Image (tube, rainbow over all chains, first blue to last red; front, side):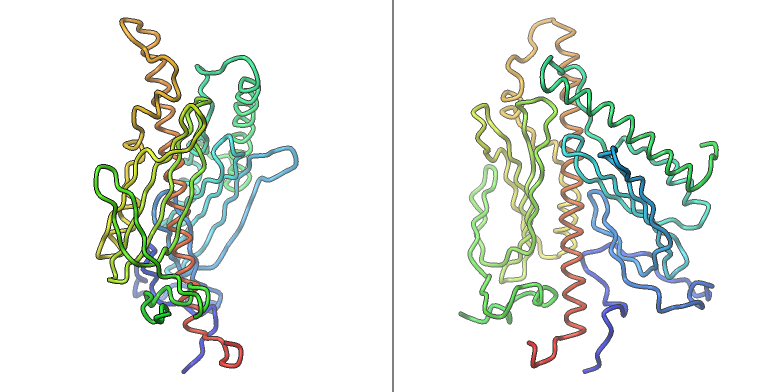
Length: 168
Length: 188
């Protein structure tokens, strides 16, 4: 029996959605350092995960002291020279826990557009202002709303640092 | 012991912890308005959701499970839990669906509408008094709260389903790598 390394492409995963098949043209990505491409499984929100063969290009995060809710963004180059992105919003338990989603992008210009169009507030479970009664829950709701503002600002700060200050 | 590993689905065999553990057992899954679904098989993956709270007493969450029967059917279990006023957790809706194809089972997890599981008992636990008569303000406030609540339930369920499907895919990929690189006979 022939042994394969753990990083060799494995068989199609029946539990995943797969990226589209490779086009026939030889892409520069395939010519250079083919062995850096690994099978990667990327989680999606409410859907079965994406199964790509790719390599990580960059990983950014706006985690810092004093910010209990932060975001992470990881970009992958796929073997078919497309791009895949994974977004993770780490939120406090009262704001909704961890939110993760991934997407495939056909080309390079589509990526910043998709990231800039992403609204981080869809990941949040905000307290209902109508229901706030004086007391502990009121204090918690106030903290949550203030934190949501910080979180949103930190997200757009990170996006601006990555892709520049383009008009959306 | 009757060789559970030989019977187990091939893509999940290495996922089962060891040849000595016979994890095959009979299951009886509750169904809403139907007799329980009984089968013998394996629990492949389960995921428990976090309670979604918008209004302090309203507490509602989902639980997901994927099973495989010895006949090769895939069973999806979706249970909606709620806490009553006494603070006791109880099942409010139970779904158990059997599929021949794995793709259909995963599609059922993706396509389930979690807000359809919010039944009146959940809401009566949350709201001491329901709006009545011609109090327009109370009605609009109530509908606003309902929209928030169902949005939360939906978001929590989607996150849960995504996590379950991701865990299953990871286990399957790990099993494939394990199959491609079997341990040395002396270590096995």
